[in-house]
Image (cartoon, rainbow, N blue to C red; front, side, top):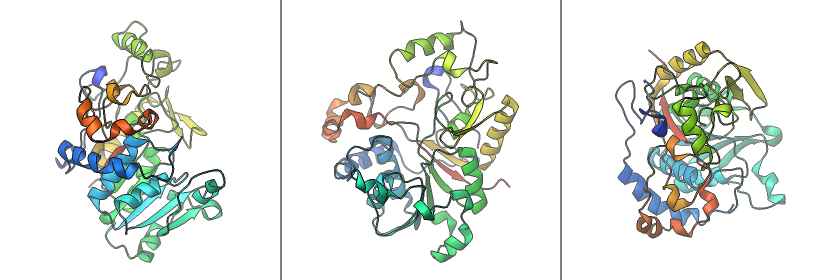
Amino acid sequence: MRCSMALSFNSCLLAKGRSKQGKAVEWTRKDLLKGLEEFVPIYETRPIKNNMYGMGFDHSFGLWFMARWLKPDLMIESGAFKGHSTWVLRQAMPETRIISLSPRHPEKYLKKGPAYVDGNCTYFAGKDFVDFGSVDWASMMKKHGISDLSRVLVFFDDHQNELKRLKQALKAGFQHLIFEDNYDTGTGDHYSLRQICDQDYIRGGGHSCFRDSDEARIRMKRKMFWEKAVDRDELCGGGEEWWGVRGYMRDDFNHSNKAISYDEHFQNSRFVESALDVYWELPPVAGPSLTHQTRYDPARASDPIIEDGRFGLFQRFGLARLETSVFNGYTQMVYVQISASS
């Protein structure tokens, strides 16, 4: 699949679910609206009301919607934190088994406040933690009675290099993946698919490090309004390396990072394109004039499900009842369907 980006910086947007076979996601904006109306009252029952450093409303909705739509026979999550994402998966699929991999068991957070531990979940956490890339998935699938890997959904919220995770998932034979933090170029603590797809040869991709460029001026202005907007000095390294984060491929919560050349970044994109059947970024649930979020730059995201100006719909769905802070966690959550290149 060819990653594609929009024409201008102001609406820089990655591929909208097209594939090397011409496939797209099955769901429509109408389906998203219907799901959104259903999800709000579910979200209001969440056990962890203040999920600081975890998923906010947008990504909680996205995970719930996609899990419910795909109806997997098994769900795997890498990175559970306090268990909010486990709870979201459980709301989507009440009877489906979950495998959760997390360095710290969610139950450990119960000592300090709300957390969620699921009764139908196999935890590899705490002293039993195993990294996703070290699991014997063939044996694990056999143990869980899974013979069709297309019936498995894998959710990554572990802040690891997404190229690494993609290769590990391909090797294991998994096809349906969701990455929670799909950081934009110049941001984040790990190398993301969105960063990889940002290339000079993509229409609308690539960036200018020239200080007097139109892009530099636009970035400086947008930085005044959006907390996570990236200006020219944040985007570009000393040698004008704009790819990844200032020319670095970050990994493991940025505890590990490696300087890469543009050629290596380019080759990474060609590999990812060869593996992608579908790439779809979750849109923000609503425009910033409705949510009052001030963190992510809407120019770097797709059009929201509920557009600015549609306050009646926003209110009717119950979104106006939610705390403003729950809309501040959007980072381009992405669903991908993958297969080995022929």
